[in-house]
Length: 287
Image 1 (tube, one colour):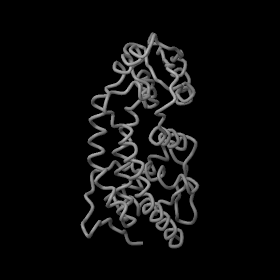
Image 2 (image 1 turned 60 degrees about the horizontal axis):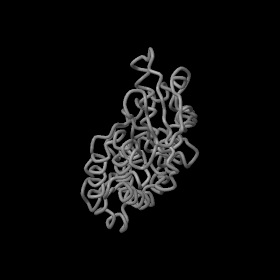
Image 3 (image 1 turned 90 degrees about the vertical axis):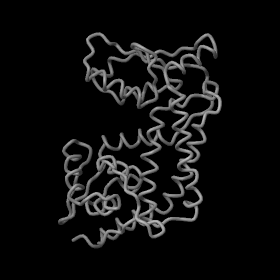
């Protein structure tokens, strides 16, 4: 099957350097998780070719990801398929939740506070715990204290295992009032920098909506959709999804999320059928 290059309006797509490993998870997260969680190597090679990634690189990356326990594999004739397993399903489910689910309203002014037992804590263990806390939207107040306006104790305990999980204790508490709540938010998160980044995202992608509404060819939509995802997903993992009462004036996070979801829906309308077409063609041509 010949590779279909992505060319909007006859111009070659500008291919920014995309990490092949990240691209694999993006393709599974956007497409293959909804069709059973499996993809043939030939399908991955064809789709990743739209991003300028060579077939040999795809083979090496998938072999390594399988050895690292992220995928299972199966073989039918000479065709190799890579399947999501419990580990990769959980990663994609958690990531999808953090990116697409927003909770702007309904806060009861209760904070979830995570306390890290730092006695004898090794450096690598600290990094794992802090990475999980940040992933689930907790902000570091200083020392062992981390805060979130959402109760995500269950998710954190599931994300951490063994000794790491035992290093965390959780409290639910309310402060004396809104001024103190706002001070906690200012201490835990750099909302000014994040707000500026949200504005830049809006300025980049809102002007593209008219072009997306007119419709793009499948390969072009695929490249643009993954680029959109990789650009936007940096923000939810820095954004604690604070209630409106704790946000600075002129906050652009909600507007950025609306631009993202509209762009994503428009691009997916063309990219998803294209990915399905590639998968179907590979199924009929593979021995």
